[in-house]
Image (cartoon, rainbow, N blue to C red):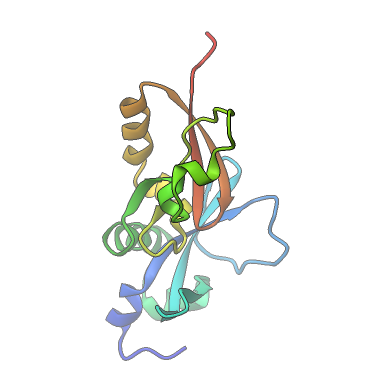
Length: 167
């Protein structure tokens, strides 16, 4: 991984999200925040290929923090700020997310609830947006006047389904 400066490196630190139970690989020691079934970790983007939509990254560990000259707390805050600026979260109807018309995904005669997808423009670690921009979930709940069932799809998005609570 080569960068022209420490400032360039700092500009490429974002927030990533991992499922606690589904990690089949070891993560280096470093800054982490546990949120329910998830762990938020800073990532260092090493390469972005916009043509293929692929992003390569390193999980930030002590070695990278030493190069950045930052503490765990500072690194997590930098990752949160960069994520909000470079990858702002967005809520889309699932039909818009997968680029099909709603009629194509609703079987004849079956009513299914509207499904929304929380991600970001590049779908790069978009599931983390539910933690660095929680107001997106709040706004959807207010807009639909319903509670939300949130289902993680992968590290790039979560599905949100408005539901009526049975109090």
